[in-house]
Image 1: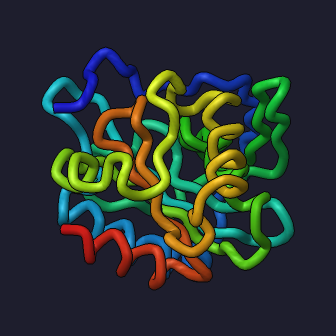
Image 2: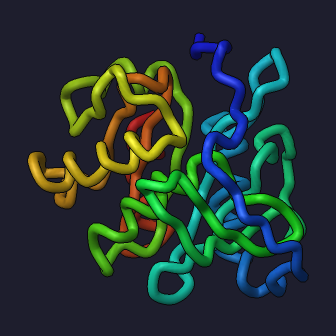
Length: 199
């Protein structure tokens, strides 16, 4: 089982600008893939109530739409459950987001990945003990000392891009975040098919 001492809570300073939700069309594709991931229990909630997993798509420039914090337990998401990350600062451990809900606790990690390559337009973060164990240290893997949702994890993303074949593999394991696996791609289809192929 995962490290249930992890709280699933936001570790960065969040400047949340409450605003209207995006329209239904904007979440059509991301919600379709989120439904698939939930069905496979790659996004969900542990028995202790802590949710896991998140999903995002690039909107424009460095802005991206991401599932909101504490939504893992919900079988179906609506526009009320997504937030737009409009700005961030790794050294300051700061995220600015807007929408009806605060952005996921993993927003800094997603931001770091989007920053590494303009061709990346979708990111999926799931939890799966079997996938995690089978890929640990066989695909690009973060340092075991680095916790999720921290500026250090964002720096780990950059290190993996610069020192491994992550840009080709499009999948990584978070050694210090048990069960945590991330895929990304040009679109959700590429990222989603990749993680499903690991089941």
